[in-house]
Image (tube, rainbow, N blue to C red):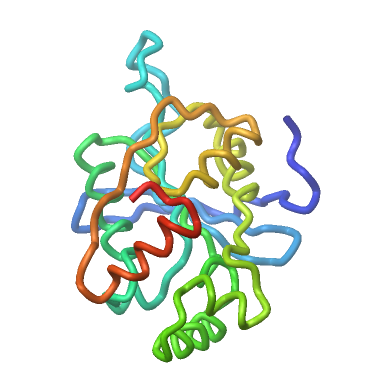
Amino acid sequence: MPQSPKNKLEQLIQAKLPTSWGNFTLYAFEQHSDGKEHVGIGMGDIVSDKLGGQSNRNALLVRLHSECLTGDAFSSLRCDCGPQLNSALEKIAKEGRGLVIYLRQEGRGIGLINKIKAYALQDQGQDTVEANLNLGFDADQRNFDVAADFLKQLGINKIRLMTNNPKKVEALESAGIEITERVEMKVGKNPHNEHYLSTKHGKLGHFL
């Protein structure tokens, strides 16, 4: 399936990335429509099918992770993003093969400044969905087509997806990516994000 012009990606470069979990490879891509730069963080021969057979274990372990500066870099307890990213990298390292697609879609697509504005509304009692809507955005503005294009450009068409979000499953399957298993990501719950997580379950349909 050809890439749609609006989401067409250009691979810029790849490089080694040693981490505390092990040695990964960074794959840098630019989205032509808006110039956003996304990266893949892969371990092992991610396009290989050398294991043989057709079992689910041959499908690549993948997570789509939307950028979250506060959670990923500052260890915020308002969300579960940082623990999910760390858990995904740990699972991949344990398996020795897999990929995290790190998407530049901060704040479910509304951007960093607007996410902080949403935080301020949440401080006044609104939930995460109400805050986005009151700022004039959809509850979730992300587009996962770019992730599907990312996978196809790397030659990956069968995956095991680490997610609690049914929209990610639907988006990838609609784009022709076969998902053989959904791997749940139940990490990062704490007293500060209980209401946030219950809102994601109740209003956004997340499997929590």
